[in-house]
Image (cartoon, rainbow, N blue to C red; front, side):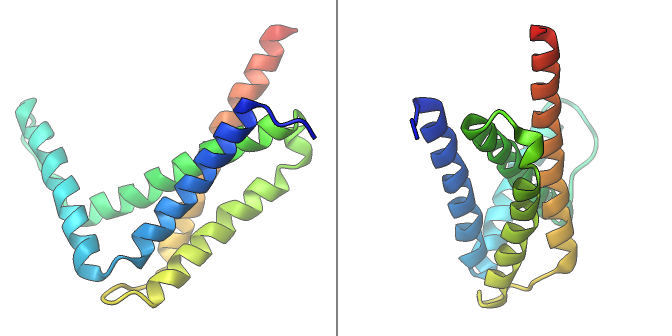
Length: 149
């Protein structure tokens, strides 16, 4: 099998994203809360600096983080699979499987992290984020192929 640069870059990026996700899972409750608070304050400062009169809550930021990190995972997962095969729809089951498997492992890791809990709702939110990423990339591939014809 011939590996080109695109394959290597996408594969490494996807692996690094999974490592980032699992790294966040092993953080204790206090570290995780501090990170969420830092992001929350940053986003609220931006909202206030553009003149909007509301602030986001920590719960929203934590759930948004789940969605965004798994959305990015889903995007890179599909880019990786597409780099290795042009028949992405014939192998779509494997990215779909990884889109649920990685969130389940992520939440399982959190069971053993001090001050953290595991949530089925988070697994579903993570899965939804990854699926939206997969769908978006798949649509781009379909549109790109149709434009080439």
